[in-house]
Image (cartoon, rainbow, N blue to C red):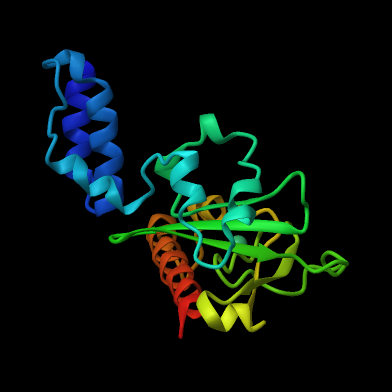
Length: 214
Ligand SMILES: [Zn+2]
């Protein structure tokens, strides 16, 4: 009972959509207090703002700028079976067997869009002087690479490409979820995280549409 009372007290403190989702998830895990089903099943659909679990087959058939054989040969992320989908806005990873290859699989209301990327031969420059164009994380020490994507369709087959700077290991979704230290300009770290999440989704969608632009 004490746990339920604490949950209810939290409810009044939670004002934003994402924190409400988090609360509902925790309440759902405590559903044995109440009944067998989810406590508020309808409200849990809020969570669709992150990724749903997807299958290897869905990944392989999502690519807009890769041949069927390129998609067939890709190596899935090592931790694929244990991914925390709730904390992903997209799935991004490097191919461990072909290190110059990377992949982005981005969900939107119409489905998944997969993009095959190529890293520069020489790797990253020594000092991290550039920001990732997707997460724009200023604290990460991770390398940022200029990833290049062949354009989708005939344009790509004619050799046209689109390049953008992205974290070398695609840790962007984790980066934007880290609360920065509070300061005078941004006194509320939770609000900063929500803004970062929106920015990541928006810029990722822009990149996807640049690759698909006719
Ligand atoms: Zn990033």
